[in-house]
Image (cartoon, rainbow, N blue to C red; front, side, top):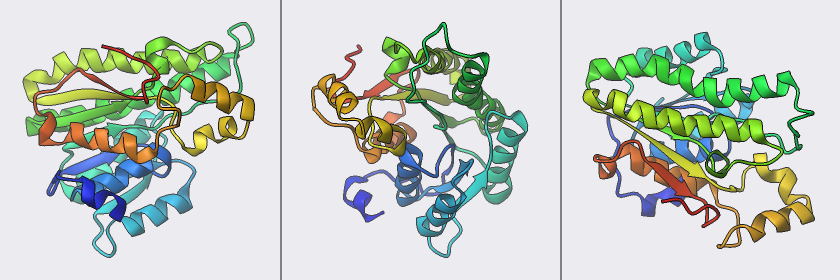
Amino acid sequence: MAQFQKQLPINLADRVAVITGGSRGIGRATVKAFAEAGAKVVFSYLRSARAARELARGGDPGRGRVVAERADVSRMADARRLIDAALQRFGRVDILVANAGIWNVRPAPIEKMTERQWDEMLAINLKGVYSVIHHAAPVMIRQKAGRIIVVSSTAGQRGEAFHTHYAASKGGLISLVKGLSTELAPHNILVNCVAPGWVDTDMCTPVKQNPREYRQALSTIPLRRFGRPEEIALPILFLASEMASYMTGEIVNVNGGNVLCG
């Protein structure tokens, strides 16, 4: 976690953050960044139990400020249990990072896309965000303050042929953020979104292992490389900090120039 130390003028001491999908990729980097900034962190994982335990042990050795909770956030009961775990352990929830999501490298043409494929994508990527916000928002309303940061994608802005269920789920998140930003503003709750492009995580490994697909992906990125997970985590951290105290309803694009949105 020393990789963040020289980059963080941000102090989140005494803040409690809940981060979904925290055991790998962008979520893992976000847990590390928040822990290093002094936050108490409860993060969810679904299948990567070993990675989650290692992250929790390494996040704040011996102090118990980083806690892993197994939860399928597409299930309302699991989402509630995750928020309750943060309340029971630390007494409040100041920040929610809704990051958990899936993507399937296999093309799914609309005429061949199954109902199960559609339902799974929307359940995890869209309902999974609704479910944690649904349970975290009342806590933040009572506290009269909060930060909600949702992780969307460039696919939610430009669409993605043959992955339209993924693009629809991520586009839905952007609309959710826009609506919630005005709905929750009277309660001093700021709601923003980060939209990454290609990021070097295990989700993108199949693309990197296919030379033709990898070259094609790189050709769309002016910086000619995939982003690093910490390059997404740090903008998320910024949105959780006092540096972003007058931002709400915004989509922060972190994509190497892949999609240029105003």
